[in-house]
Image (cartoon, rainbow, N blue to C red; front, side, top):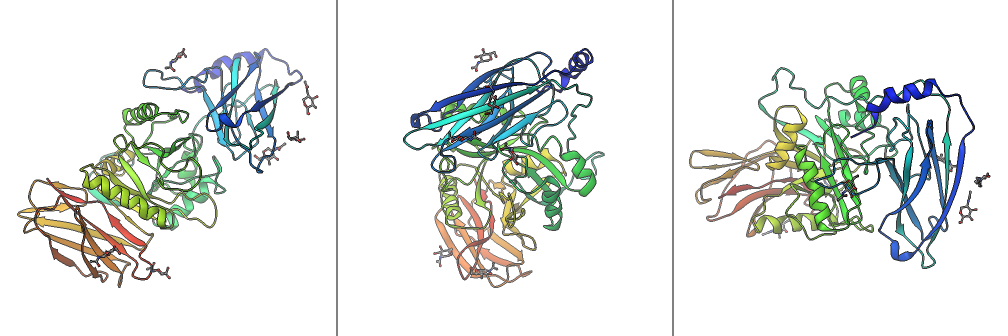
Length: 476
Ligand SMILES: *[C@@H]1O[C@H](CO)[C@@H](O)[C@H](O)[C@H]1NC(C)=O
Ligand SMILES: *[C@@H]1O[C@H](CO)[C@@H](O)[C@H](O)[C@H]1NC(C)=O
Ligand SMILES: *[C@@H]1O[C@H](CO)[C@@H](O)[C@H](O)[C@H]1NC(C)=O
Ligand SMILES: *[C@@H]1O[C@H](CO)[C@@H](O)[C@H](O)[C@H]1NC(C)=O
Ligand SMILES: *[C@@H]1O[C@H](CO)[C@@H](O)[C@H](O)[C@H]1NC(C)=O
Ligand SMILES: *[C@@H]1O[C@H](CO)[C@@H](O)[C@H](O)[C@H]1NC(C)=O
């Protein structure tokens, strides 16, 4: 899918090339307000023997009513990737974060994929995000260089499976964060800073999830080795579309997911790409306020999870919990997860932390735990919970589906780091028992009959924000 396999060809070309002057193209155009939220492709020819591509973007009323995203597709083309087409020509994306990028065989601007520069028609992609009524006048300066190349990029992938000899095959609660960014998209944190924070926040796993780019996933191995060899660093992309953001998590090496679809069918296609690779799909911050950040389609059938708690708890998270609860009541097995969405100081990964019951310290086990809703969310380090239901001879854990009725069932909740706060028991009929909780003390409660499910929340007694939230235990 990627270009690293063409390296021998380039090496052969380079040997016969002597440096020549760069070629500069100045391209201009106009985008009409009616094109906002679509994508505009600007073709340019890459000549044989080119060893670098630099693009500088400029446009009218930048930051004063106009916003224009930036990315590039190489000679493989820019057709939409679907379930049939496995080739994807994307060579990088920086959204509205950068005004220029460089791609060479040995390195590239973060967010762009280094590797062989193949001749042919490349396309800058411009993504109008906001426009004044007069539209957007844009200019692109494209500079292609021919300097000889003697080093080539090779990815260093993180280890996503620590079970090398099956030593972690037992079930284990692992603390993690599914959602964070770096300088490889629009964050200020470097990968090593995010990794060091994860260790300080007592996390066992993290997912790098830069916007529409796999470039951080391709360099993280070296950082894992150097800073946190015991931290599981998994692969995700925040698929940042014109109809909402979602997490494609548990991806293959160098797997990209198309973000340019404009209808539900395109979304469904994209989710299939994730599922085929063994990953999960989670709708991110469905009620976020910025344009196209909230969930754009009324489709809740193709995601495995919902990020009901994004960064510090606020009213949009409360709306997400409400929506998730409605889906549960309608009988959909959709997991609730959290994500810090940390980009830059002062935001911190692990706030909130999602704790999953995984069978094995590996990406595939974490994905499986999410798909089975074997997960709960807490506000951050130092907080945890144990929630069980005992019915007849069965002890059910968070996410389990028991084939018993709830009559006579006992629920047990124990927490750490939340003393004096309010524990709430919730069923498909709503909140049915609230009480004060004490750390380390088992809270036992007999469940009403004929519940579809029971789940728990711990709420701050002062401002009602969530401190903990568990996925339901089901009675089927
Ligand atoms: C492109 O624009 C740059 C900067 O404005 C200018 O220096 C250069 O001469 C132009 N090149 C061409 C081929 O028009
Ligand atoms: C950028 O575009 C604006 C508006 O089109 C123009 O006024 C300005 O001179 C351009 N800047 C550069 C560095 O080309
Ligand atoms: C699949 O790829 C081929 C060749 O690149 C292209 O012609 C075709 O339009 C693509 N199909 C879709 C549905 O994008
Ligand atoms: C190119 O982008 C970098 C940041 O990535 C910025 O520091 C630099 O000023 C930009 N160059 C121009 C000519 O705007
Ligand atoms: C229980 O707590 C929840 C969350 O704070 C609240 O919405 C609900 O009204 C409470 N129920 C009762 C019966 O107090
Ligand atoms: C509960 O909320 C209050 C008011 O926002 C805050 O000061 C306090 O730290 C919170 N308590 C916990 C345990 O987070």
